Length: 470
Ligand SMILES: Cc1cc2nc3c(=O)[nH]c(=O)nc-3n(C[C@H](O)[C@H](O)[C@H](O)COP(=O)(O)OP(=O)(O)OC[C@H]3O[C@@H](n4cnc5c(N)ncnc54)[C@H](O)[C@@H]3O)c2cc1C
Ligand SMILES: NC(=O)c1ccc[n+]([C@@H]2O[C@H](COP(=O)([O-])OP(=O)(O)OC[C@H]3O[C@@H](n4cnc5c(N)ncnc54)[C@H](O)[C@@H]3O)[C@@H](O)[C@H]2O)c1
Image 1 (cartoon, rainbow, N blue to C red):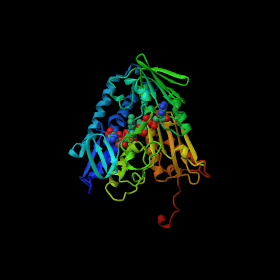
Image 2: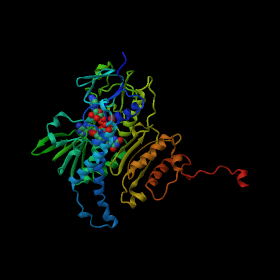
Image 3: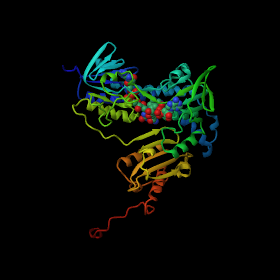
Image 4: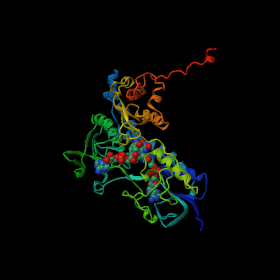
């Protein structure tokens, strides 16, 4: 029997909407099903409100550099946190409104409700059963929150609730120092909150490079208290929360829990598909096609835990949307890995991670404390390390916590993607004085480890030809 729909898309987040764009170009016989609020995690409770808070925090923090420039009176500045949070929500609403336009004209093809797979072609939403040739799962993730901590009620926050607060208390605990923990701990500290952060591992901000990790830790420890290496326990006190991890403890008014996010796949009916799931409960899928096993199902965005960041979710929606509209899926080359954590200095990693490098990889580094332009701007902090292949000096990856780190990382991502060597990169012009000169220092440190690598970066002209003399 023919299916009434070509495609059902589950989830109206970034991946689902990106899939929708591709599917709509090819058919009208689709349905989008979304549970909970529309507007995407990124715009509603993720990338955008977090960056809005960070921008406010960094703007206020800039006052700490003013005296060194000879600008007086900064101590008279203060934060109106309620106003900061109002602006976060106002601009957040603006970004969400833009996203909502994508589904405004769908009419009956937009179904609000929680979907569950009955089999590889059929989905149940409330008392409705929808069937299609193919299904795209783009159901995203939700914050991990241990059951025991839920009993602390509104004293525990996640990024789903943080930005909704009209105000924030003086003492804030943070659990987890991954991307969210680092970004929010620094921002809240810069906005005048007393922040105590706990993480069970020693690595922060997702960094795998031990030296960059140590540098970032030392810098952030100047801004908030950080306890790592032990599991934290939370318990209620009179009006607050007690946090204990090994020898360390703190009493706070509220706790932001940022210990990762879990794919919204646990109750979606994967067991009805007849495939084995891994230990995380995830189905096998091909990251280049996004097809789940050999089923007519595609798994896109954070839900597959492959690369849970925005541009990858958008790419995956595109791939899933196109592949769900054809009989044989196309294979797509994925982008150079790039991760940015919006700390100051900016944390970023690109290409191969430190722990995936070949044993004989060559590493060059730059310490930004003495870097000219960074020093001129009173932001001379951080470390950048570039990794290159021993044979030919091809760039393999980099990790950094550095001024303008987000921009340096994009430049390096392009170089890695194009298969450039450190020698190729050293041939580009480096204007003076720019932070990129710091990157050049690190590249030169790699080049010097090659025979003849301390020669000039300039290439020689081709031999002069007779016609050139004419
Ligand atoms: C605080 C925070 C900050 C972030 N900052 C950045 C950043 O700076 N840069 C960056 O690149 N990334 C950032 N991210 C990550 C980025 O937000 C995600 O990669 C992206 O939003 C994932 O999109 P998605 O479509 O996979 O999921 P989502 O946008 O979460 O969409 C999934 C949708 O599916 C719905 N759904 C769930 N279950 C069902 C069901 N059973 N049936 C129907 N619908 C269902 C959900 O309710 C949701 O609407 C951040 C994330 C967070 C939380
Ligand atoms: N700038 C960005 O791109 C950005 C910013 C924020 C969030 N995000 C995305 O949001 C997602 C979630 O972020 P996140 O920071 O919650 O997750 P994460 O996985 O990045 O970090 C979670 C951290 O919490 C630690 N942890 C886990 N359980 C713990 C426990 N019981 N006690 C203490 N520490 C514990 C983990 O070891 C890890 O370091 C990530 O996938 C990330 O990609 C991205």
